[in-house]
Image 1 (tube, one colour):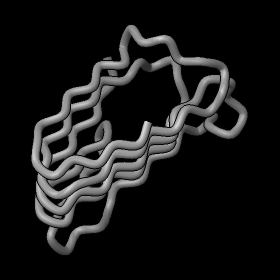
Image 2 (cartoon, one colour):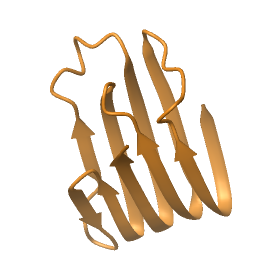
Image 3 (tube, one colour):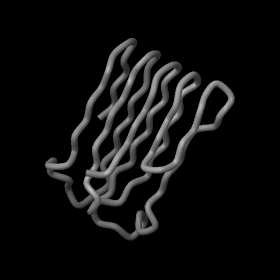
Image 4 (cartoon, helix red, strand yellow):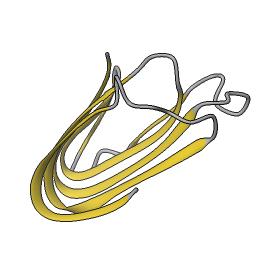
Length: 101
């Protein structure tokens, strides 16, 4: 999935989604957004979340804008995992929250 949004709120709940045995890529970009994402615990993740003005929280890691750097999270077993999701999020203004379900 590759999605660009100008302005909006996005909510993703992957807790009951079918995750195939391969790497799944999700790319979210735009100007202004509040993003809430729920992910299952039994999948490996590589997550990059960047907000120029706002806050990005991936599990327990936080990054703040305007000067704060992006948040990058990689599961310990990412390279060896059969089911894995690569998520890239980049927004100018907003809040990004990613949690386990």
